[in-house]
Structure formats: structure tokens, C-alpha cells
Length: 95
Image 1: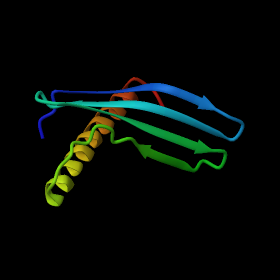
Image 2: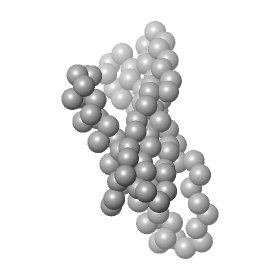
Image 3: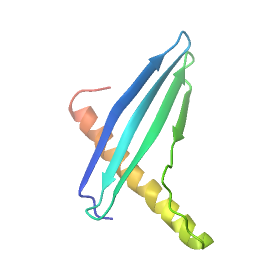
């Protein structure tokens, strides 16, 4: 899979007395298409994480196998972007 560019930006942060929630915009550009999705990460007082990925804009595909393959491609692209941006964050000293 070719990757032209990736980006992961914190777009929302909420903190209540027992939970914090962060929303990230994750972008993967392969030179032909740009995939942008939101990831919601929550952590409770016990350190338990809950993660949700929005998959907005998924195209209508009539064939089951093609739909599964397209979904797998999107997940793989998001994984590339997350790993790449997490490594950059560590290099910058973020924790």
C-alpha cells in the first residue's frame, strides 16, 4: 500500500469527573484518494480504554466480498496513519 501522507489531529477533548474523551481526525492519503475518519478514545478512572471508529462515507457496494475487502482496505489505511502519527508523536516527546 502506497502512502503519500498521513495526519492525526486532536479535534475534541472532554473531561468529566470520571472519564476523559478525545476525538481525533485521522487522515490517510495514498495519492489517489484521501480517507478521513474520526476516532473516539475514552478512558475511565480505572484506566480502562474504550475506542470507537466512525466509518462515514463508506460507499454502497453490492457484492459482499468486495464490501469486506473495501472495509479491510479502509481499516488498513487507518492503521498505517495511526502507527505513523503515533511514532511521530513519540519522537516529539508526547506521551
